[in-house]
Each structure stands twice: as C-alpha cells, then as structure tokens.
Length: 161
Image 1 (cartoon, rainbow, N blue to C red):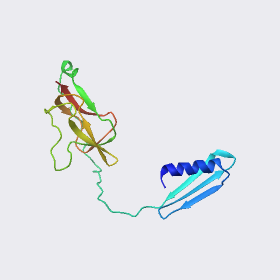
Image 2 (tube, rainbow, N blue to C red):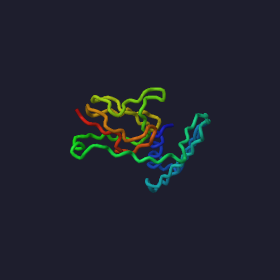
Image 3 (cartoon, rainbow, N blue to C red):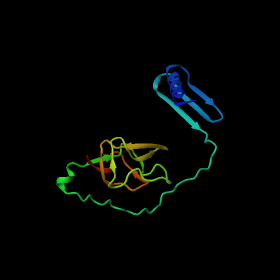
Image 4 (cartoon, rainbow, N blue to C red):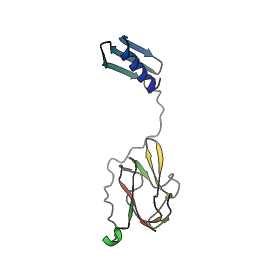
C-alpha cells in the first residue's frame, strides 16, 4: 500500500460513517479511526514493521574533524568584481571526484567551459552533478572534498573568459 492509497483511505473514512478501519499485512499494519461528526478528527495510526535488516557498511564521520577556515581569496577588490561564485543548489555532501579511484573533476587554475561538471553533491543517496554556468578559469575551490554543504553555500570562484 503506497502513500496515495493511504490518503484515499483516510478521505474515505472521513467522508463516511465508518468508525474504524484496520488493514494488516505481513509488512505493515494500519489502523484508521474516524468520527462521523467531523472530517478534521480523523486520526490515522500507521505502524510499520521493520524490514529485514541487511547489514551494509556504515561510514561514521570523525567525531573531532579538523576545523579549517577556508583561506580568503587573494584577489584585489578591482579584480573581484568580475569573479563569479558557483553556489550549491541543494543540501548534501560535496565530492570533487566521480568516485574515490578517479581524478578530481576540476582543480584550481583549470580552464572550464559552460556546462562542464565541477563536482557532485550527494543528497539522499543520489549524486547530483553540478555544472558550470560560465566558461572561465577556476580561481578558488571553497569546500573540502567529502564535506557537508548547505543550500546556496559558495563552492567555486570562477574568473569568466
């Protein structure tokens, strides 16, 4: 039973004089109690049984990670007006490589083209490629590999062509 079906069942119970519906399966049990005098008082109770446990490797972050302040760009104020900052479009974990045994997507000083992949950000087990909006040269990489990033956090500084 998926979420949409559960919603439909809740709506059905709220619109009828049914006081209680219980559905039980080997994977889950759902009990919906309704009151015939009010649609807003339907209170779904969903109990899911834990799925069989499959052991998978768990990566535990270092409890005492080194605190590093990213170095400040060494460009003058007149030069910084033409620099473009690429920011994270999502929350996740920043990776500079497509996989641990591969080379970095880009390094400081690399010439890049519009649409070129700069990094990947993992969010909920999905790896999202972050592409450049402009052509230019990588001036600064502001995030360490395998670091968590926030929405709209600066990742790269690019000097456009």
